[in-house]
Image (cartoon, rainbow, N blue to C red; front, side, top):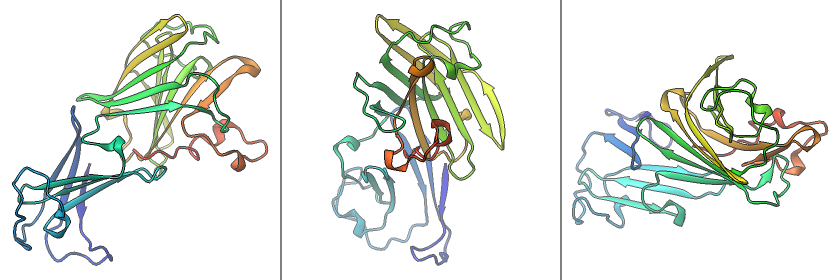
Length: 272
C-alpha cells in the first residue's frame, strides 16, 4: 500500500513534493518505507542514529498511527531523517513488531456468551500470503463433507467450519475463507457483484475432541483496501445449528426477524 501526504492537517495543499509512505508485509513484521523532501529544520536530535529518542515529535519526522477503533489502543511510529526513531504505544499487546494476531470467539452472533472452550484463530504475515491457524473443539456435527480433504468444497457453509471475512467497507468487495476440520476448504471472492471461487493450501487434523488447521491465503486474493474483518465458528444441525461470532451484534441492536446473514458486515468492526 502506498500513500501520499498532499495536504496540511487543515486541508491546505502542500507547496512541495508530497511525502510518500509505503507499507509492505514482511515475514517479521510490517515494513514502512518513507520518501520525503529533507528540510533540515529543526536541526538533528542529539540521540544516536538507529536508537529511540524521547521527544522526537519536536523534530523533523514522518509519523504513522495504527488504531483499533474497538479498544482505542494504538501504535505510534515516528521516523526521523537522522535515523532516529521512537515507537510509542498504549497497550502491552502492541509491544515491538507484531507478526501475529490472536482472536478468541467467545460469543454467539447475537451476543450470548459461549459456555465452552472458545475457538482460537491466529493470523500471521508470511512472504507468500496470510497464514490462518485454527484451534477449536471438534463437534463432529454435521458429519464430514463428501469432498476430498485439501480440496475446495462448494456449500461448505452447511457443515462444521471456522470462517473469516475480509472486507473493503467502501467498495463492499470481500474475501471469505471457510475451513473445515475434515480438511475441506472454500474460498470466495466477491468483487464488482461477481463471485469467484478459488483454492488455497490447507491442512487440518482431528485429535479426539479438538481440531486444528493451517491455511495459507495468498496476498493476491485480498481485495484492495481491506479495512474490516470478522470471523465465525459454526457447527450443529437443524435447530441445534450454532453460529458463534468474533464480533457479535449487540442484543439491543437486533431487530425483530433479523437473521445472521443480514448483519454479517454490520458487526464486522475489526479494522485490519
